Length: 254
Image (tube, rainbow, N blue to C red):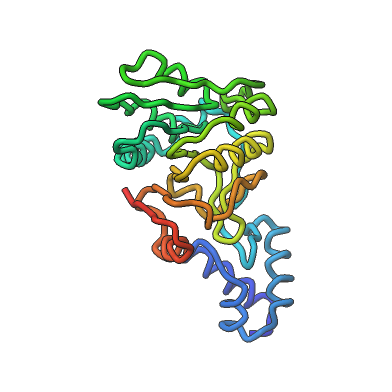
């Protein structure tokens, strides 16, 4: 398939059908070099017909945007509630957890009604306020500079408090999950704090609806190998789940 028009038509039709394409597969299917395919993908991206990704291209924008929390709250709200409910099951008899920022983990805070004492550490103001008068819950609110988009703190002060803390489980909301690049969010200062939170916790649980997969935020939090659980909804592709589980991550589908 040497004709550029035929190649472009083939790529776009495959994208329309599958949502994304892989350079290695395209080389085999079209009988041209990887260099040719990369040039084709760049030309198609320049025409705003696709988004190039690591090793291929996607019909959807793979880069996460730092949206305000009040906008995110209404996106996939039913899925977020199911994810949060499944996350509650992982707490068990744990006596300390950490809850990050974001609308999915906030749903976890809303549903949290422990029957025994539980310490909750959080940088998120909404989480702290939600749990501040909850029976059996003691809140340790991290301090620092408040980001308006997330209503969460970040910075050196919050990180310094974590130097003297250890907790059982960290529940993190994220903006992107990429097989190669790992777990990301769209703000660098919060990414740095989340990295510190990961060092503090024994078990790392990612709460993310299916729209977060095959996307990248600006700030990398960790590799997939550092994660123990990912809880997501049933719209995530089976191939993606398989690739993640091959990295020894337990994926819980709700």
